[in-house]
Amino acid sequence: MLAGRAWVGGRLQTVEVGVGEDGTITALGKDLTGDRRHDVGQSVILPSGLDVHAHFREPTAGERVESVDTGTLQAAYGGIGAVVDMPNTDPPITTVERLEEKRRRAQGRLAVDLLLYAALTVPERVPALARVAAGFKLYLSPTTGIDPPPRPERIRPLLSAASVTQLPVAVHAEDPRRFRPTAGGGDDGTVAWNAARPPEAEEAAVDGLLMDAPPGLRLHVAHVTLPAVADRLRRAGQSFEASPQHLLLSAGPGADARWKVNPPLRPPPAASELWQRFRSGRVPIVASDHAPHSAEEKARPFAAAPSGMPGVETMLPLLLARVRESSLDLPVLVAAAADRPARLLGLPQGRLVPGHRANLLVVDFRAVTQLRAARLHAPCGWTAFDRWPAIFPAEHYLDGRAIVSGGEYVGAHDGRVVRPAFAPGAARPATVEGSEASRAGPGDDAPPGASARR
Ligand code: DOR
Ligand code: ZN
Image 1 (tube, rainbow, N blue to C red):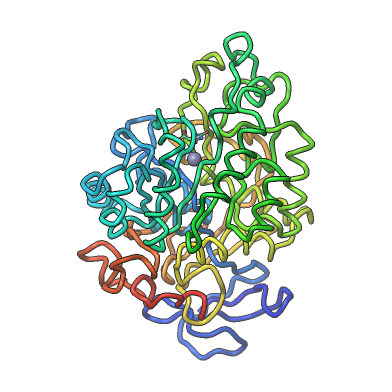
Image 2: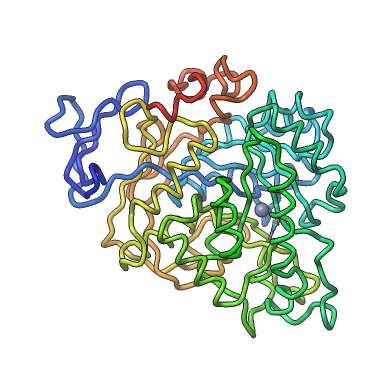
């Protein structure tokens, strides 16, 4: 069992977290019986995070290009116990064969759990994809690996087909019909990029989605950048995420192509208003949109550089530092980074409650460090948050077993490919076949709604 402080009953208090042989939390309380007691003193025990949006680059991974090994290793260091890997790879994950191949290749290489999304491109393929995928990604605009996106008249049939599957559908919501030509060839930095892919494009895309989304669709809008769009989605009761870059950075003069992301960074008022919504709990999920283009690619002129920045390792540490500075409340962060993502994905984790997987972090809030790219584990070799304060978890547990200890990875690279409990065909052990079965907790083959009940 782990003994330390945890947020229980509306306050931080000293508790013990019992962990069973099966890797689940068995009890939460004081004076639990059990043989191995690990006292973490003043450190805080949290559920590990779940990042619902990352781009690893299988199968084109190379020395500077993200693989599932390096991507999930960064997740482990950054306190993320499960990551959603997006399908805009080369080739894109548009068929069952490609999805199966990606799943097969991932086995035995994962530092944490992985969820594989399929690209939503052809309605007829949806039922078969839904038996393997953890969710779908729909791109409404061109972006890395996606050009062209589905035509506008295809969107409604795609959403209808996906709604039958119960699986989450994450949408990159920018309407390309609202894009504008970039002035001067687009070499003018983040201000021009914001003008080229303007706020109206995001607003129009989300308005269209809210009209087209059939009832029952598990819609999730990716990387919302605008406070007004966040408010609109909240009123409509739809899930969405914001990314650290859109919460903490903004468009301004002088920023080079490292700050080029899709959708663009917005000017300071929008970014700070989005942050205010996040800290008051009005942004349901925070997700990294980890897009690890190499330092060399990002050193190109703005117009020629790819969009996106790394973040799976730094998202939670940056936000934990905000908690220490008292600009963010711990329960708000845990809800957005662990609990709500787990519920979107139907996984029995994300809360400190009996029956959930013992996917846990131990965080010493006194241990503030300065982010430095050289100390991170990203092949891309850079971070947009150089020298920002950060707090990395000292310990990270997956199913009750340490994968990070003393700030170092000590795991066995035996993360699993997992799927929502409610996914089609997930009644059998929903993880990949083979040795991992021995680790199968109650998790992925639990009945629908299991995570909400626990
Ligand atoms: O900035 C981005 N980078 N936005 C996307 O939509 C894709 C991503 C990537 O895959 O590089
Ligand atoms: Zn993305």
